[in-house]
Length: 318
Image 1 (cartoon, one colour):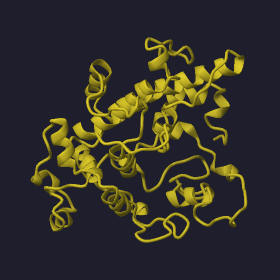
Image 2: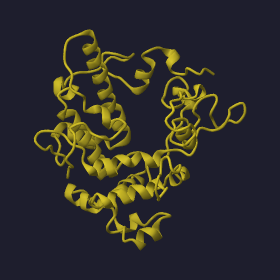
Image 3: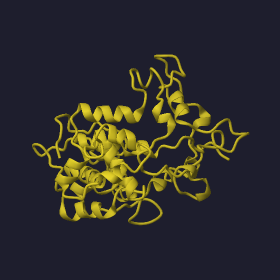
Image 4: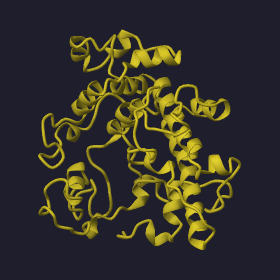
């Protein structure tokens, strides 16, 4: 797996940006608390997040038998472009058109103001031109998340499931706000992903599958979709952009988790970042298990949200 030169800390956002920890030391109360929080977050990434989005057998293979493709340069982990520009963009296909976000923004109609959409997210965080340039405004108070609708707490009927992992995306992803988010054409996020992959010279999905010695998708599988004409027009059925290939692989396997190529890339990079960080529990204390939360030896995102107190779960109230 090729890697690109750059800073030791990975540039990507989300879970990946936090597993490779910043250097730190000392034995003050602050440093002990910092280590505890860091270890618990890394546990969530490795034992809750990854098993929910990739093939668990692939993850276990990497943990038991080591990484086969993602190697470091000069013993320092870097961010592979196959991860940052293709495989880890799988989440774009999971974004819903609307969300039941809290009692003010949901799909139930009045007295709710409106469904929660990506458009509102862009607007409320300043990327939609909603607020004047160079000003700082607080997030609207009625946009605070009701976490019961995002993670599993005591109301499973409220939870918003994601969209399936497949080769389609929400219509909003094809019309990004202009010019705050998409300053130049195209305004379609999928199109931008494909162009970026081509510009950085990503290998095709078939090439990565061959390198990993896994069975590649067939042309029939790759053209079994509403995009068949476009796929054939550009020869993608035999030379498929890696991002599209990873999504199609997930779609073919049911859409609940990534397939062989996508799972291997994510498993090796996440485990590699943890192994490469001198401040992770995998490198410092490989047998460490969580000490916080209601269940000894386990810790989830829901546990993390609830830890400061139950009022944190739904600050806006019913």
